[in-house]
Length: 129
Image 1 (spheres, one colour):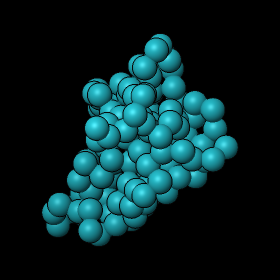
Image 2: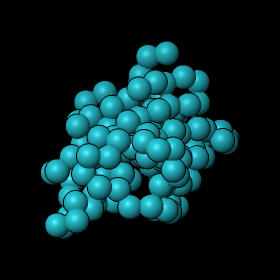
Image 3: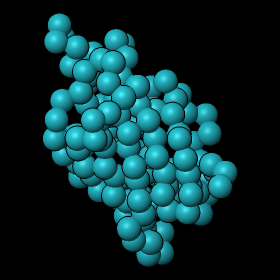
């Protein structure tokens, strides 16, 4: 299946799309030194959230999908050098609403992130007049 949304996203910041299928997408985020916040090499959660959001948008896979809200939990810290796999699955589609579950795991398979993303499919681009 071809990606229909977020075609100009910077994959070095928001993760590389590994696969997209009907209602499911997988994104890999390689945590780089540019993402660290301290001497421990802790990765800022915003980058992980961004990759999870990208995975959710790709799972919906509509040109006019936007994020309405998200409820997320960070379960384990990530450090520079980690590879994080985020899998997004559309769990509900009702009218314009799409509820998407996203789970992130590290290279060892340990769950590091979970979230529910509430997305909306609009009739036209959110910035179109």
